[in-house]
Length: 358
Image (cartoon, rainbow, N blue to C red):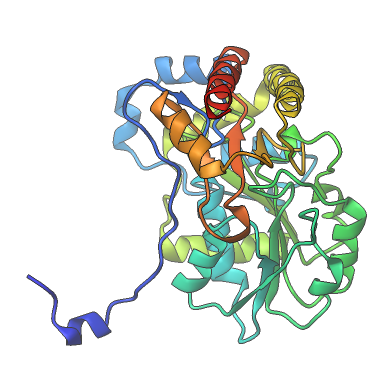
């Protein structure tokens, strides 16, 4: 039965974010930028030793153990760290908290597509700023009046990073707005520095990171923000008005163990970087190009083959990559860096597909 028009008029309508496919069978999954390796050993041990009786109690609403571990790891005070249920939860809370004026917020036209969704959900005006021909931000586009600024660095889905110098210039020229740098992929970058280095100098800066990529804990949903204590306090005010117990106990305890094991973290990140470098060379041999090399994925295009056709044929071989069919992205595929074995299977299949088409 269809809802009446009067009821329909009272319902908030939003164009939802479309996540990458999550096939429920064994495939080579290179479409959602997950880490191909398990999390740190301490995470596994914490889950194995956890007493089920603890789950009947509410978790610590402040997630103090995790906040403390993150503060120590990044050389901050606890009042400079906010944690949430994945960086999506943290970013959504940031939109709700800081983008609260009649002026439009600014972000790139090619970027994380959830930004438009949150802007629509919270009825925040926004303007998309076009990237240049090499997929870089044009600083002059962020020198106008605005209600806030947000962009990923490195960017998704392009894997292009912006310099710390450019970010500092944006901060200087927007001191009356909150500037959010979304650093989901920063740990994989070789030539892009974290904006966390600027936190002590700019009260309007907020840096957001995640455990989903480099710490291999997408299933645990842990994200965090670093910034001025007043910004963090405002985020917590919004969180406690929304849901006091946003982070579950296993995530808090396992998150602590993941941060503690820096050696394992560095080993796995370097392993992914090594595979990325090899994969980039293999793509080049096949005639593919890519604009950046700063994340745990590659954004590739080929002058002779349609991305949509490669995407479909890879899927027929149970290899899932990400294809964005609209606008400037329709000629590109975003391909997560998997294990060496997974990437070898990808290239074997690509060679067969390309030889058939020739």
